Image (cartoon, rainbow over the protein chains, first blue to last red):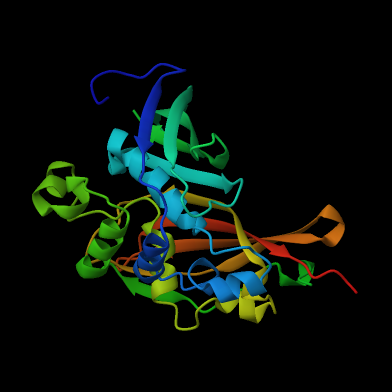
Length: 135
Length: 151
């Protein structure tokens, strides 16, 4: 999309990811420095009142960030934010999407605002976010 | 329960180096194959001095190199088992690349009770500077504490 300015309504981000496994959560625990046992230790998760371990919100945001920078070079991202709308369970197959919602001028440059979502295979929204990118 | 007196609390600054091996582990874990993160020539072609970090990696760097893991939780008397991640925000002001040494200065900026005290939202804002004193980013996390019901 470096060629040309996107229009409001254009879906410029779209990527699907493989199902979340326990193995992936263990790797992410190590790779991210987030050692909260609730994501990898089923005994701890049950003690905390959950039926099983579940994905780190930041793993899911990491996937959303990957989908974003597949479409928009990292040097053009001005902000990236999300709300964690629901817990992402084991086995979730995530789809990340981003649509242009607004074209703006900010900080002396032309920018676009993107609405971002991550949904699982049932269409449940896990992350509802936003990015501002330089055009 | 955490109350308004926590607003303004600051925690031990964290200094973290962007190391290529640790970054590769993160990229492999996410199945990230974008060459800009892995190949110096591709990064330079994209205008970076060295390979940049992915958009969420600042969050990881702060956790990896914290001398006291989850310090803000223990300092505020919050049980890790009762915490969920509510929101996360990154504002990027300048590139962060392999070899940079970053300093994170976390501070509580907000405490809000929800659902009649069943939940407390705590916002921690963290400005990030690099080895040259450049303010490279602002990171903001909102955590949700599921408060114990009085029995």
